[in-house]
Image 1 (cartoon, rainbow, N blue to C red):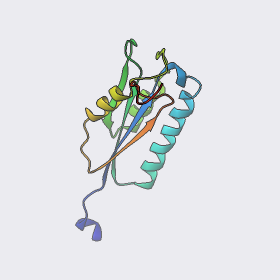
Image 2: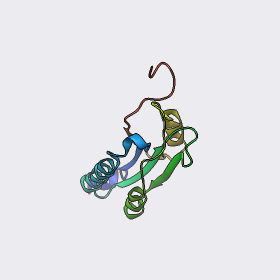
Image 3: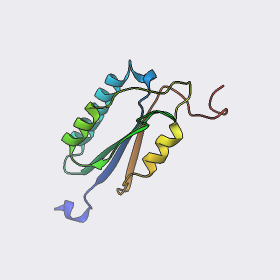
Image 4: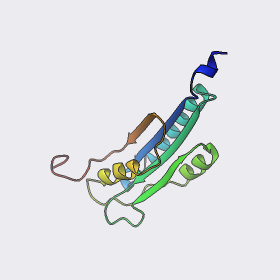
Length: 131
């Protein structure tokens, strides 16, 4: 009865991930954690509209600099996309973190509840971020 007075809850959940070679030993664990987070969110918010997305970034000059899955409610599509992510490239200490965040901002955000999870092991370019 009270449900008719409340809007259906919506959530946009985006994962921004460093996919450079330095993440090679971690990328499978990262993907498992992402799947666990998505599963928990879907289970805890049954009946809500949950849209998930992914922005994987590497570095300037890498042949596959970005891997992007815009927001979707199709969990099977998201998991299939995520399963294909591999760590490669990034041949220096810093990575294109700013490019990853720029791609994140270009996604089709539409929910009032907007969350991003950032996973990385290297800093951004710029002397203020690393030596």
